[in-house]
Image 1 (tube, one colour):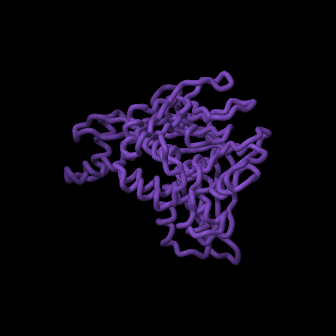
Image 2: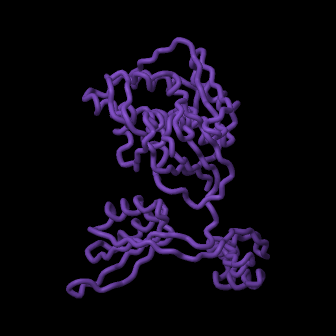
Image 3: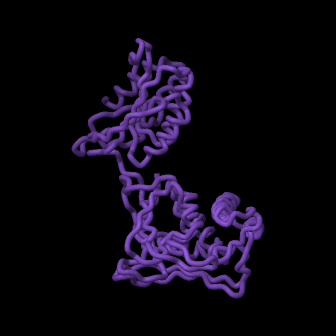
Length: 386
């Protein structure tokens, strides 16, 4: 799986995010062409290499002539809908702007349709949102993970007055996201940056195990004692080998319809569970029960808890952190008398130690050739020298 990890030690904004993606390898000409599909007059985007506190980074900027700076949500929806960008990008862009509008409406206690987007209604914000969405798609990013967000400190002045950092609408957007503050005076997280990252990213925490293919730095406008850049790591999920940290989540259940376990286990795996298993136990008053155990990466823990508390009758869980030693594994294609099959090869000290043919391939061959499954398995394993 191709992933992107954002290291937000200096917060996040829309232009910093795009600068980071370009710095990490996003084709600028492609981005320029996609932005052109918006049909905005006199819009010019630019990406230039600059140095922030001795860190080479990319500054993304949007240039444009006179535009309508104050827009309602419907104005932005109309602009997006009339554009030539792809439907999936349109849908996700509407979601990002809706998130901003809902936050503004709540903060100012007004109907959604009356919210003025003020500075975030400017054309550069529309470009940032659409540019980020098309950028992720072009890079093939399947999952986005983000660090805790540095909000900065002090106060910020804008059209509504003077407020402590983060600004009210930004704070509303960031509900449920881990924040921290440093002594850097100023606003480090913009509404646009907050809306994009909270819409696309469902995991906030430490960098996950990954094979890094490129690193990009997107430059911010302000200068601080630290480099005001957003760092992104692009790469793939690392092969599961060596020492691995997992959270073990357990819960005892004796009052739930057992037919539900099939659905619950499917949901747990979709939310990132590494292993799920059931153990028969005896509970209070000698009632038979089930211990449901889930192994998960720490970054997926909150998603697993959401499933357990919403889908089961559990009223509490036990959580402990453990290490496990696991072998590297690869999926390879092998030729056999019955055609090609997939097999999982496990490796220890750079040498293969086990080969396990995929069950689905064995089943397919059994059906296609009207042969017993155990015969097919034995013949293919013998051919592979297993």
